[in-house]
Length: 367
Image 1: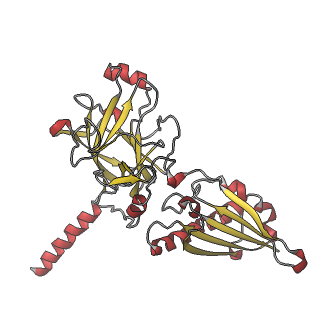
Image 2 (image 1 turned 90 degrees about the vertical axis):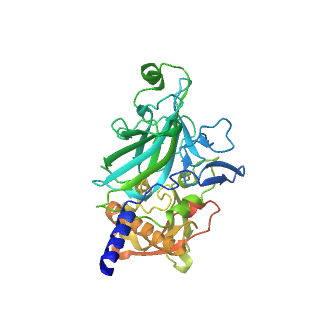
Image 3 (image 1 turned 60 degrees about the horizontal axis):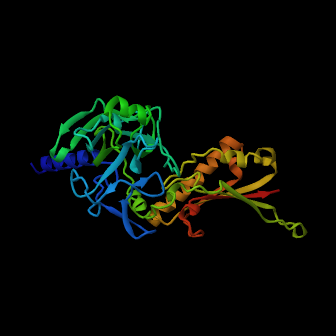
């Protein structure tokens, strides 16, 4: 009997883990205090596209709509005839969605209208944070709409939306907003017939994995996202900076020392808590090596991270970043892997800006 109980308990724990929500701060109740103004400006772990967050409703918001649960929710400006822009919020998933896997999406929505229009809300899974300094109008070819979702009426004008999806591409970023291909004027005339801006209220966002294909949750990602406090400037995890720095370290022919060139690959290639090189333009920067690779005696590739997350996690992440660069050097440039040494140094605090510390340094020793 005891063994049966242990089996049932283990099975229940297995199901619970497999059904774990992969959306950070899904009820939006954890509040970020932005460092620029020392004010409550956004939910922790979530990022608004423009420099100044808008549409995060909390107790200090006058005439606010009652939240579906708790006291916080999003107010997404979905349609406005005054301009072409729309509101979007984004976050990094606790584990990436993967092709072929099934997921269940649920969220609660309300509207400035009696019933929210499901055309005005969607999910977009992408691979990078998006930063917009001016207008925001996203119209991707493929995104999740909720026209065929299950809808259940709730109290206070809220509706529970449920939908099951099968993902076709790997993606780690969730973006929420209106992705309709129609322009705002067409949407107003066809569906709303009113010139007032239309808002969609969003609360309690969940994405759960199929029980048969569980997700491996990154235990450090939530803390890393919560540690990013800036909200009134460009998103820290994707702040544009020079793609590479190249400078000679020394060239002393009198003492016959080897010539060393240094390349630094930073956060343009490495997003927060990620080791993939997503910007292959770095290949162009390194392409001159293809003409001189026979003159290279050895190369050192050293990976670094910022100081968000645990030392153990960052140690592994720095090694993975260095490994990604080696893969690029071997496959794209044609460098002999036998002359490459690699190591991860973990956390770097060399630069004041955290994103500058998410980098890989390459040292090239010429013959």
